[in-house]
Image 1: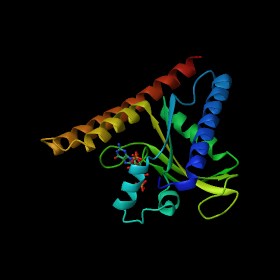
Image 2: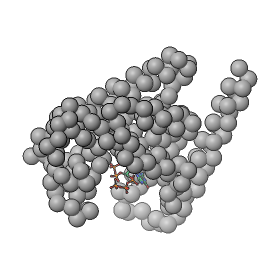
Image 3: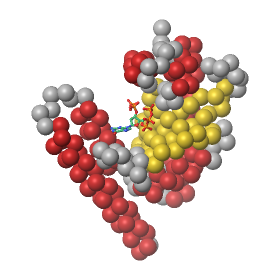
Length: 203
Ligand code: 0O2
C-alpha cells in the first residue's frame, strides 16, 4: 500500500490539472506576446519509496499525514524558462490563480545556495473539491513549484547526479568546480537577458 493511501488519485488529478493550466497559460502568453513564458514543464508525484525515505530521514512517522501535511512536496512541478525575467512573470501569474494561496517562497536565484544551486521555490496551498487528509471538503493540498532557467536546470541535474556517486576521488575539487560553473552559468543567464533586452529595444 502506498504512503498516500486513498489520496493518491487526487494527487494525480491535481498534478494533471495544474500541468494543463500552465500549458494553457503558456499558449495564451505565446499568442499575446509572440514568445514563450517557459521552455518546458515537468511534473511528478514523489514516488512512494522517495517519500518514505524522506519521512525516515526527518524522523517523521511514515504515514499519510507526514507525506501530505508535514512534507509539502508530494506534488512537484518544475517550470524551466529561457530567461530569468520570465521566472518572475510566471510567479506573478501563479499568484493570481483563484484557488491557490502561496504559503512560502524561497528565492535561491537572488540568494544562491553555498554550493551554487539556483532556483525559485514556492509552496502552494490549493483548494480542491476532493476531501483532504484532515477530512475537509473542499480539501487543501500542497504543491511545490520550482522555477529555473535552462542553465540552472542543467546544473542542478548534474549536481543531483553527482550527489549519488560515492566513488568520487576528490569531492572538494568537484564541489569547487561545480560552484565555479554555477556562477559562470548565472553570469551567462544575465548576459542572455541583456541581449534579449537589446533586441527588444531595436524593434
Ligand atoms: P527531489 O528528489 O528533487 O524531490 P524539504 O527538503 O523539501 O523538506 P527544504 O530543505 O526547505 O525542505 O527544501 P528546499 O530548499 O526548498 O529544496 C527542496 C528541493 O529543491 C529538493 O528536493 C531538490 O529538488 C531541490 N534542491 C534543493 N537544494 C538543491 C541542491 O543543492 N542541488 C540540487 N540539485 N537540488 C536541490 P528533494 O526532496 O531533496 O529531492
